Image 1 (cartoon, helix red, strand yellow):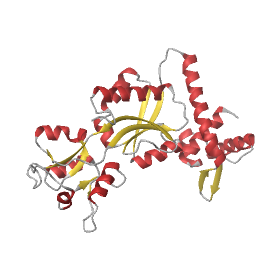
Image 2 (cartoon, rainbow, N blue to C red; image 1 turned 30 degrees about the vertical axis):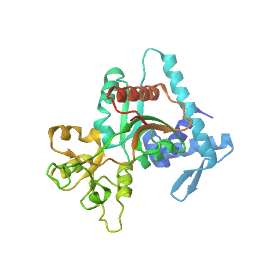
Image 3 (cartoon, rainbow, N blue to C red; image 1 turned 60 degrees about the horizontal axis):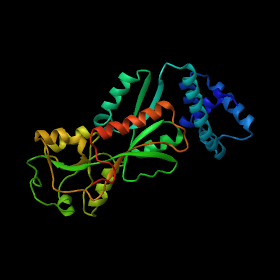
Image 4 (cartoon, rainbow, N blue to C red; image 1 turned 180 degrees about the horizontal axis):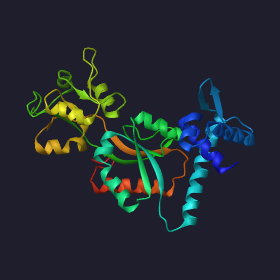
Length: 301
């Protein structure tokens, strides 16, 4: 079993494509196929089911991937320790979302840019379900989640904070200024929202679900939602961090309705994976920066 074969196997398992793996590794596709076959021969087991033009991991392949992640992380750690003095380096592929990328990550990106310039952070926009899948397949090294649940099969995670949510509207909206609002009040107005699969959107929709209710008005980005709200198109439930400036400037107002559910910003990675020095640094700094920002810890009042 050779290290380069494990690297190739890990890439094929992440992409589920011999062709794409060959492109990313700068190999001929025949070379990738030869390496995988050599690995299967040495282990005496098939690692991929080949179904026409598609492939998937066999149970043996899934088991090997867990070991490959650990072995290659150890190899990288050993290489860095033996080389010495160069500090953390390499690329971290990070699954994230707009609310985190735009409003939570800038201090983290700045920290790594100045303190660890040899660590490249590659951000991959993804909904939480997609991030969880990519982490299990090894396509992402680590990923941000904003969800109600904090336990995810096949993954390990750390909760960074409970993410405050706020229902906002334009100052002139009919619901603005009312001392108390019920779910029935909210069912009577237009609601602007992100696409399905966003945890707080799905929870909010479930709370307001009514057989006579029209579908949510879906916007592509949080910035588009904010512009729609400010222009009076409707109300929206968003993480407070994304609308803090607009609330301070009076461009939006917070409505008197508190969500009966909570979502938590989390960092997750593949279960059983030994975190590299660079990943551990990323997790530690994310926790530190969230605390410095004063974001409520999960479960706090």
